Length: 118
Image (tube, rainbow, N blue to C red; front, side, top):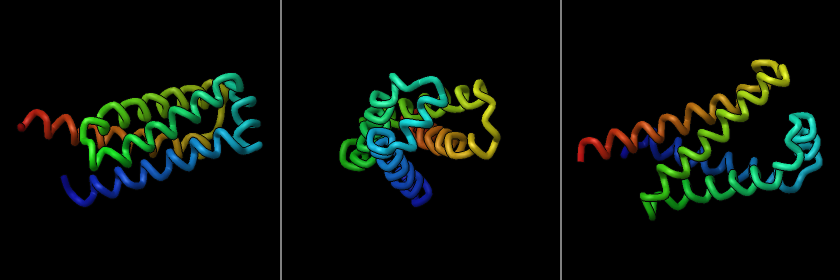
C-alpha cells in the first residue's frame, strides 16, 4: 500500500485503542454513555473498539484482519453519528466520529480496490 494508507491505519488503530480503553475505564465515558442512553452497551462497545484497534494494528502482519476491523469500526462510528444526531449533539461533538468513519472508509476502499486488481 502507500504511506498515507499506513499512517491512516496506524492513527486509526491508536485512536480506537485509546477510545476503547477510556470507554471501559473512565467516569467521563460512563457519563457520556448514560447521556447517549447506551449505558448498558458501554463495556461491549469499548471492547469492540479495542478489538477493532488491535485488528487494525495487527493487520500489517495478518492482512485478513484489515477489512473486518475497519468495517466494524466504521459501523460503530456510523451508529455513533446517528446517536449523536438523535440526542441533538453539535457538529463539533460529532466530528471525531465523522473523521474516524471517513478514515475507516478510506481503509476499506483501498482494500477493496486492491482485491479487485489482484
